[in-house]
Amino acid sequence: MSHSGQEKTLIRGATILSMDPDVGDLEQGDILVEGSEISEVQSRIEATGVDEEIDATDCIVIPGFVDTHRHMWQAVMRGYAPHYTLQDYFTRIMIGMGPSVLPRDVYLGNLLSAQAALGAGITTVQDISNIQQTPEHADAAVQALRESGLRAVFAYGIAFGQIKAEGSKLPDDVRRVRSQLLADDDALVTMALNAETGDDAAERYNYRLARDLDVRAARHLVSESQPITRLEKLGAVVPGTTFIHGNGLEDQELGAIRENGCGLSIAPAIELMMGHGYPPLVPAAQARLRISLSVDVEVTASGDMFTQMRAAYQAARYSQLSAGHIPSVTVEQILHYATLSGAETLGLSERTGSLRPGKQADLVILRADQADVAPVLNPYSTVVLQMDRSHVDTVLVAGAPVKRGGRLLTGNGELLAEARTAAGRLAA
Image 1 (cartoon, one colour):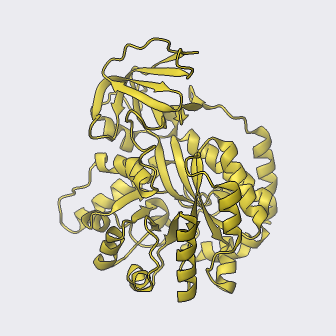
Image 2 (cartoon, helix red, strand yellow):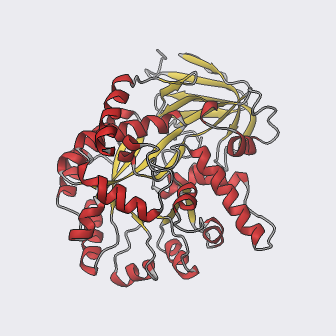
Image 3 (cartoon, helix red, strand yellow):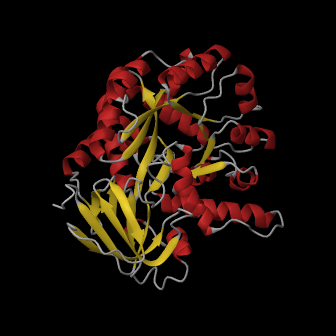
């Protein structure tokens, strides 16, 4: 052990994309991790009492990816719905399958989804947990998140079928989860509300609930006219809300997101495949919004950020090219959306999202010495457009290794066997 009583890990010789304007990028540099935090980022670090030294020559180190919107419970049915439209998804997954989902299924799905995220270099996920049919469902979801080692925001939501039948007012169980399970806002797993569109009374109630519990909110933007303006008139915009999708929003509505200190989570792969509408990357950027990227649903999309970054870059460039404009989107912007901007959207940028001394050591070491990505001429381009899960060598969350040498450190044989059984039952 080091003299300070904290484990010291020194990462040497990497190309560092810090995403921090003060630290900048280093063509070759070192990172010192002490305990759960980054203590130094320099071209060369001379440290004593180092417990582990990682040779990151020919590697790229980035902050852990931040996924701001994922329905993690659905991983137990991963890949089940490749051809579904959005309406198919609502009808067959949310209404048709949702009522049969047991608390144990939620536990399995959340744990599988968390492992997939960590294996792909995603260190933070906002779990839009819209499956709370009983308190036991919520307990199972939180338990899985805590066991996973992932940094997570548990956004408590209720099942779609219940919203259709009873409205979007969140249940009293939210208060129990906040007080008994997720009271510590400095913990690895924290809390938000998934507050969906409802009548005026429900909107006001959910706003007061978020205020009383001192948590943020997340909500999908549906095709209603002027959704943010309506919330403003009701006095029901929760500060720091993660608005999700936002396809086809008017400029006034995009501006209202910015003016209320909120952010927009875009899930470009799902939006293109399911027919939500064209991913609004260009109008959102023009409105100077805080933009983040998200996986959404693993029943259809891959649970990694490389897929989302490429879909976002392609969609944004095509949008500008088809309008006769010179594309302005850059790979640097896309990586920013996938890291620091995501942390800012979730209110976590003081602890994660960039490689800055004093922040939590949420970081990813990517191998760039393989024939499918080398030579590295532009490291941002390499990460955004050339890499995939196979290049994720090492992942740390709050300084703790969860992946080394390309392998997750948690076993999953029994988990996978149980998940197959659950998936067969739900599919039937």
